[in-house]
Every structure is written in C-alpha cells, then in structure tokens.
Length: 85
View 1 (tube, rainbow, N blue to C red):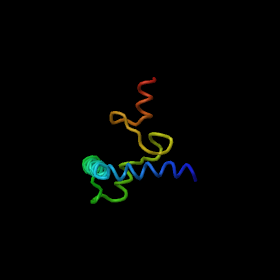
View 2: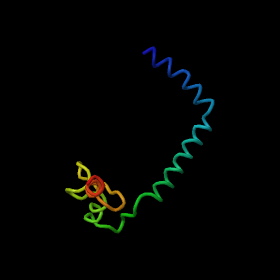
View 3: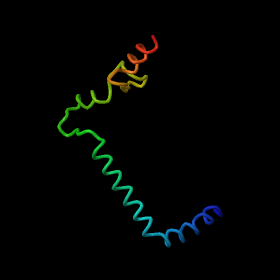
View 4: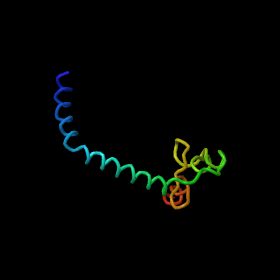
C-alpha cells in the first residue's frame, strides 16, 4: 500500500503540470498509427474468406506454425534448400 502512495502522489502532480503535453503526445501517436494502418494494411473489403486465408496462411508451407514465410517470393523452405544445398 505504501508503494502505491509513493508512486501515485508524484504522478498526479506530473499529470497536472504537463496535461496539455500528454494530450498532444497521445494525439500525435494516434495520428501516426492511423497513417501507418491506412498505408500498410491491405484492403480486405471485397475479398472472400478464402482469399484472405490465402494471403496469410498456406498449410504445409513456411514456418512450423503454418503461416507463410516468404523470402524474395520463395517459401522459407525452398529458400533454405536452394542456399544450403
């Protein structure tokens, strides 16, 4: 209980002092995350479930968890076979 009090008291004064800065930092982080998601996530609205599954998962290929691991357009297994001999 004493540790909570020791941590809470300075935190309250810091938040009261820098409230506008804290809001600005969170607003900037939110804006950056929206831009990243917009440009990095593929459009999935018009795709079927089968097409979405094919984007991220091919049974028996890639890594041991079933998810595809691609290196220069090749499966990780094919890539390893070609480069390891």
